[in-house]
Figure 1 (spheres, rainbow, N blue to C red):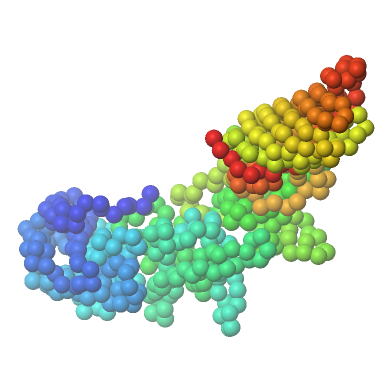
Figure 2: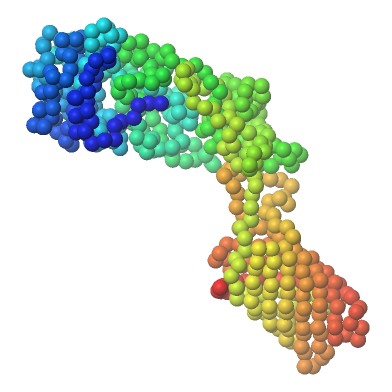
Length: 539
């Protein structure tokens, strides 16, 4: 883990740093903090700096580094100059405290960490003692040395976590060859400042802050606004993209200032998280245990080897199709992994990782859920409903209009209606339905559609199979009356959106009896089609 910044007030940290004995340590660091936009040393800080001669063994010093820093507010170049001025002011003040024979150097780091402005407005005074590796490796000149972008005693960390979640490609812009990094998440939120590096003619490491810009990339379903950075290809090949921190360094540190190359790196198997977030899938009707997958060609390096899940045993093979828009995609199939939920297996490949502490691959962790889907429950308030339909008893068509109240439960629904039919019959109906099965209409299609997967699919429009019973009375002053009792099975389309007007279309069929007929136990076929329009709802 990288060392974190102190969270205590700066004067407490400074007091502890200045009053801690150095016996047994190869180096000491004293932090001096500044006000916003200022390089002036306060009177209180001057008094505390005066204790250096008392609390530290000056006679054992081999060399000193003054490391100036600034916050990320404002212009990068302005902050770089401000960090230099702060470091030089501290160095000049310490001239009267420390013998001039001790080599020293001023380094301006510029902006430190976004979101930690107070802790970034400081100068670190680093004492290196004789006989230590740190002192032998510093090799710095005197105070009059020019400001350098090569801060040797710093920690450089390639941001492998970022690279594992980005798409990296080489593009040409004019005569320049650039590496384009498309990231999944905004980089300003994570508080990191990224750098690229190059070596100048003198062999010195030069740092350049990486600028992230939100750009719309991709097309069709993968058309999104993403954070994008451009780095010269030569710089990326040599140093990748990295962050900088102060000593002590953790095990993933790269010694760019001395080696000018990457040494702490090796390949490891990682989930291609960027590709997984930009794929589409659809049901394979001939094999329910797997899904068909398509991905944009621009996000696949066909020369690279891709795998399914953990390990290198199951190779993933890409297929191409040469007609229409299909030529823009690579196609494959992924099995469903049965965990707490159903997920498709992860696409993995070898990526660059820190040799000493590689990021966990998460290859067996479900990332793209494909099942289960669920149907949004119906509105369980009382609903004032208008119904229009056709009732078909005893081979007679009776179109009707009615008004009534419906009340849905989790798996049941009750309806009470009164109305009139085409034969001027007044009718009243009391109906009870029990829902047996709910499913999205897409399941009935022999051809499934490509879908961008999410954590879980929720359907507000779906089909339902139900059974029920209805008691229906017809009153006609000019002819005989009827009292029908029916038992039916039905299929309906349900719209469960809270403010939907057209919330139910149904078709049901069964058997019926007319209790007012001369033979009340004689059964006959009945059918009914109807549409329910929601007018209002209330508790």
